[in-house]
Image (cartoon, rainbow, N blue to C red; front, side, top):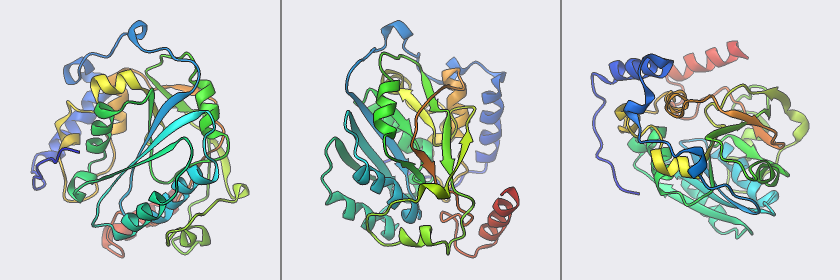
Amino acid sequence: MQQTKVYPQRWYDGFLGYFFRLAASGMLPASWFRDPIPKVENRKKLDGPLNLEIVSHCWQYSNMLAYQLSSFVNHPPKTTRVTVTVFYSEADKDTAELLQFFSQHRISNVNWNWQPLPKEQLFRRGIGRNWASRSTEADWVWYTDCDIIFHEGCLDTLCEQLQGRTDTLLFPRQERTTPMLAASDPMLQAGRKPQLVDIESDQFSLHSRDRAKGAFQIVHGDVARAIGYCEGLSLYQTPADHWCKCYEDRAFRWLVGTQGTPIEVPGVYQIRHIHKGRYKKDSFWSRVRSKIRRMQE
């Protein structure tokens, strides 16, 4: 990946963040901030086996990434060819060791694609997502997070759902999630060393989704290659000195002009957790955010 110049946090980043959130509410034309979206009739309409790229970011969440990567080993796709792209930083030793462990596993229809970044680039999720969008060779791209698990039948059913479709943006109608887990929970502890892990599905409850939010954005490959991911919104392409709250998924929905179309995809699981590993352990903001997440739960 091309290296991006690292800037210190700029005084006007807060203003840009507010401006782009206002723009994403519909106050400005999205076409001002992106390249043209390919017309539906000009997009590839494919049947049969498909190529899918799954794009994750990981910073100090190796214990959850272990479950995601294990799901490709434990439940490999039979009819879908999957490229698993993970953006990470070598400064995160636990994640680097985990990826090295999974590099030793050769899985049919699965291609590991580890992309190391300086942590300042990793802290802006839009940078990695944009690079993946512009460079992908896949028919479809799923932008996700490292706490999402693709369990039995998930990817092959997704392939069936994508047959002949040319939609811009899709998302799974339902997912299964854990309660908010404490850092001491056995599930989170099991993922702390490089090893294959699996979930107990009865620990998850079913929830519905109403839009292509965050970790649930499935984009047609022709669209991804044509417009990138928030490429024209400078803030979301600027490195930062800390992990930035991820508003860019809302901006992306604005740029493509849709909240997404729901599809039926079984086997989508998410691990929810109180402690945010990307914030400094026991810091003031770490404690505040953990308390907020407990109240939300």
